Image (cartoon, rainbow over all chains, first blue to last red; front, side, top):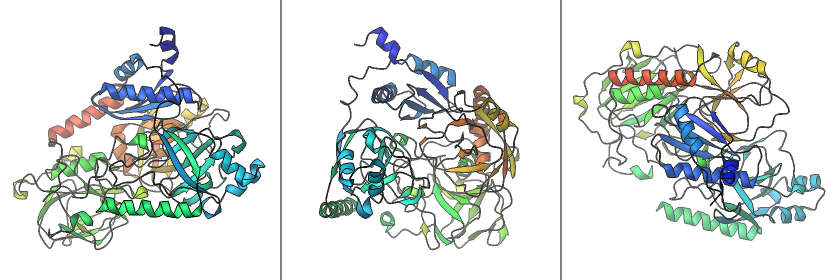
Length: 246
Length: 332
């Protein structure tokens, strides 16, 4: 059981109205696994209350946005409910969430920025791959496009800014890095992250029974694969998709 | 479409699709934690009225026609209503009224002429459009090819079907929205906003600039959001904003100070700080803006915004009572 001092420390820092039908609860001002674990446990806590008129609960890096029906809640009473909601102290930052191993073909046509990242970091491309695949990443949040995970933190040697001009179309499955973050583009969209590889595994499967591979709080490990394995896995994924459509 | 390869007669054949005509309902909330936009109709008021006029629940799927109307051939009798923007609708060449229920016969042809006021027009048909429910909604999200008609805007030659009707079409008497409740659209609107309570991201003068300037809707505007051009909103340069959840109606400010008004297909999270949020009751007016239109902002309190929405809901319910929630089963 957390002590009262711990509960005090874990109390939401700021409750910010977002228009007349949403509110954001901030837990910190940094991208930090402890803060994010708190965000995810608070999100779970709100869902457990099963309050009528709560439309969506969206955890992000360091805050939770709660969308509500403005005909059912006024801001002050919702803020009161949120303020007194004690947040269970997460037992650890790494223990919760499913661990996913995601195969990636690095470099070449599938990772067109790998060489530039290596040059920027003063490393061999193979070292960039080894470093990128050496960390178990936390899914801090999902946003940008359906299923896009914001993963962190990337080893400091690989810190690189976004492209000055985003690409108009990044292919689905592309693995990118930007600052201390890495992510995977689930669908083809514009994008400014440096692309170092591609996974054949779909992150968003619009007709599947579980359409999204990842959820906030999960863990991701990247596994470097060969061109042969990439093609084999792509075929398996396609076959599975066709089976699910029958 | 795989789910509809049967002997049913289509309700509608699309002759011309218009600029951007999609099937939408009230959207798919509940999946924002997975990055799935809520989407749905841009103008909820117009879409809800259209549904109530034809005896549908509010959640029934309608057509959202953007900028220019489609041309549709009816292959069955039905009852329809057109609301929202005035694109000069005609049935077999004769002008028809907006915000009215209208009987349509097999062989009738619905077309649209010049755009007058507003930018998005809604077409509801009795029963609602029948497309598969994906993640709890029939709405089309084009970027991820999710929902609606095969995840895309309508094309010439598409066939549209309706869901089973709860009541015979001839029991629907000629319904209309009382004229005093019909919104008056304009190419130049004032939207009420709730200012963000944080003072971390903008210079104090930015709020004054926001509420004392006119902004123009830029051409690169769509269902995700409108780019606005006008006097820049000065951000505090050293302030650091960490991506957080977004809301529809939020005015986000990139480093160049030109705000972006987020609309229904907005990303669920955003990396630009918000300066203010348009109130719910004014979002339908925002939904009717097109490129080149102008907008001013005036501050409003949360309590006032919620009271305005309650009043609007009460007046609409008194004039056109809501129907029970939609059944999710498709017609036989």
